[in-house]
Length: 352
Image 1 (cartoon, rainbow, N blue to C red):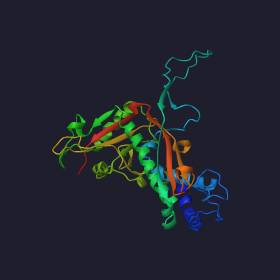
Image 2: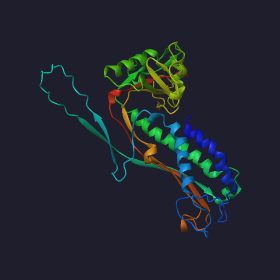
Image 3: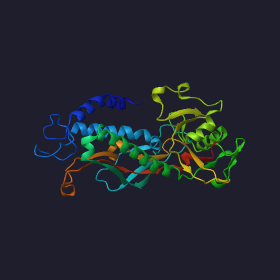
């Protein structure tokens, strides 16, 4: 858990006390406000103050980020402001080897950087929940806080799923234990199956190393489903994070390392339901083995994810009786594979 999250959790009692004492009326002495519109003493409800807006916006991002397993290893790019709907990712070509000896006293020709641009179109996603005036009057819990927790989870899962699907469209694919296609993968018994093995991981590492794919802090990274993890962790080569890295520097959801790959676990790793062989057909699981700079994503803290609260009455004639307030999120995002050969997708079955 990061220091930022700990700080916000420590602040919650104070925030809850403020909301417990706040009745939404103009006589409130706490100045807690529920959206960005300016209100006067004549209105029902106050607006969300800048401090509270910042608190809830940061809280939303902190809660959403643990869900973003597939985003954490990509190049981060802020959302462009006033730059249209297209974001540009840049990829530099490696410089050639120089095998000709220098001539004494002669300055050699210089070299130029070659950069290629990959573009992606950004899109917006979002959702909200409605809180009725009756719920505000009768509920024991702080509804803004509870709603923020729920929409943060929704936002994180949504954005992570979008990135996951882009990554799983990569072209470098390997089928566990010599499988020839997704449809041929089968689980017949504990000794006859296409479950992932350490050899499969080593083959993926060999593929990346053969492409000179750069490592991430000295290792490649794998994103693995818990069911698939089960089939690797029993191997004697498996190491837990405390055995190879300072636990202050582990990745989100990191579970261990084997064959030069540090694995993070996610229940949202790609699954192709009933896509394998057998009767009934088995599910097929994706395990992504990633190198550095394999893909790019937009940054949720660079304007990509927003927390939006609208107070009762802010809708004007659309809410004539001041019955509804809303808590929502909006995100602008895109992701892009930058170097296809810098990622390997292992498709496998898993022990049921």
